[in-house]
Structure formats: structure tokens, C-alpha cells
Amino acid sequence: MNSGKTLYLSGQIGLDPKSNELVSVDTSEQAQQVFQNIKAVLQEAGCGFENVVKLTIFLTDLSKFSEVNEIMKTYFKEPFPARSTVEIKSLPKNAQIEIEAIAVF
Image 1 (spheres, rainbow, N blue to C red):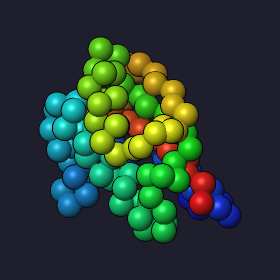
Image 2: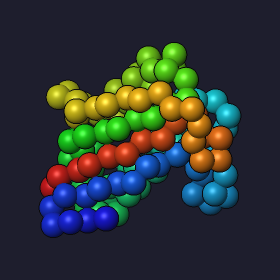
Image 3: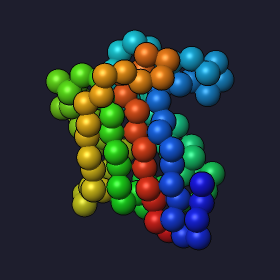
Image 4: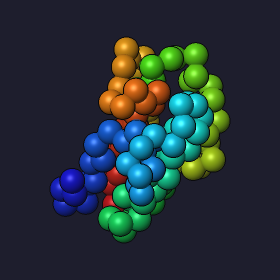
């Protein structure tokens, strides 16, 4: 949803856009796909990762936090957006990670 100059991205999981299936059972591979999916939405809206001001990350296993953090660093430059990370029991399609984002442009 685009509300003026703020873009609210609903939760993205590691779905391959062509097959609509998870790319892998691996959290890191799912995280890579999530960020690729977010990138596609941002580009369609005419902005990029530099416009993201807030992320909410849901993980089914909080021990994967550092892996996801390293992957996130490949998409964002400092200063990083504000972020909350929450451990959750389960996600749609048995995904391991879901990310919501807010971008301002």
C-alpha cells in the first residue's frame, strides 16, 4: 500500500514469485529471497532500500538472528533502519522468516 510518500509493505516470506513456493527450508536462503521480494516491491514503487525506515522481522528460531543480520547488511548501508525482531511459533507455509517494511520517499 502506498499512502502519499510512505510505502507500507506487508509481511514478505521467502516465496519464489514464479512458483509461489518457498525457495528452501533454510532460513538464510529464505531471508535472501525475502529481501529480493522486498527489493522488487520497492523498485515498483520507485524507491529502494535506502528509503526503508523500519523493519519488523519475525523468526521461528531466534538463534538464526545473526545469520539474518549478516544478510540484511548486504542490502542496507548505515545508518540501518529501525528494526524489531520477534520470535514467533509459526508462519504461513511453514516459512522460517517474515519481514514487514516501511519506506518513506
